Length: 459
Image 1 (cartoon, rainbow, N blue to C red):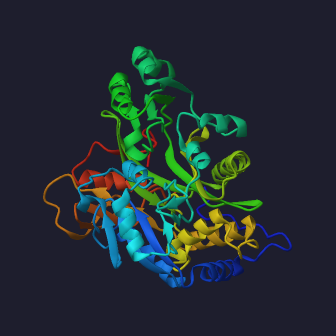
Image 2: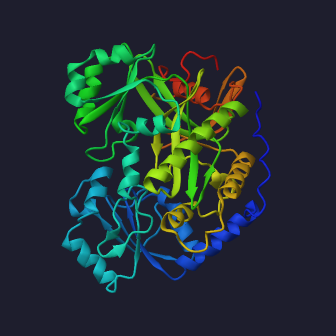
Image 3: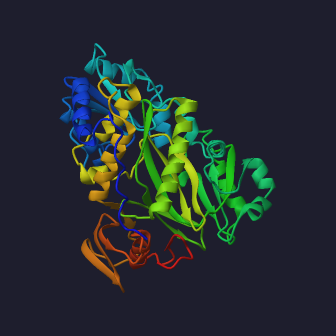
């Protein structure tokens, strides 16, 4: 199995050279942002906001204020003015914060108008912010309703069917019908059971909030009842036992850029049906054939996404690489994490570039999918990276660096704030998967029941 990326194909004549991508993007963003002031609309304001604030400042913009659901968290960048919902007695979940932004009330409007009486500021929200204006100010890169609708896990199979992308056997049922038909799990499930996913009828319920793994040892009805508190329908699908993975891509005017697949490092407890998301790794090398299959699925799905919704910007196709090939699970029409470009090109303004593509900012018309694809894939392959953390559940592990060895494998890590962050992995897996090493680390940290996927594969 090859452990290097295949050489990029020559670019067609007349396509912007990959070396010109950075300059083209920088010039367009500086022309747009220089001298502008912004108000950020963020559910969480902590160290994860640092890159966005740095990009704005590098492009000549001033971050004048921030509106958040809670106060500044650890590592939050310095911003002069802030409105924090928690300080006003409002304890909001992330989905409820996004709903609150639609009608924040007169007090917030008065506060913001006092800072920006001419309403010249531009608002910037999260990847899920679905409003075009906030208190009379335009929201740059807002999420259109037709785009958000694609993320509903109970409707995505229509897109897979239209594009010929493989997905597991499934059924979509109302919560009431699912409770009346517990045999659905046995009918659809394989050796590892089923996965039950909630719809988006009552707001976004992604990540662990909207997903339950139900192995044969667990009760299907319990999972449906849990999800029924925030959903009207559920999708029941056969659990596909494979390497969890994702591929990010970008829809540009008239072309698509599809990047390299990444490993979505997820551990599972087969007895309890528990899943633990640890992060992502761009070290993974699935092999040329599998890589072509995964990228081909993303290209077909992306073309259909653009055709049916007019989508622009970054999106991801998630799924699993099984013994039978790639099977898709979801499409996220937003800037998802894990691309890994920052490790190779730390000053590339990816957040603002994505929003600029979504808004049609002038100066980016010459960026073509083939050139951007080559630029990103080459940069990520040259500087593969991990973005991983494993929670400490057992006693006696001090903060600081550590090393865990097991035969031909070792994991270097650092413990802080209740998590171990792997910094270097020498995995036993021939394809450079990080999952087996994270399972080894989880056992050391007090959770030996967690295993990497595929569950039955030798590392």
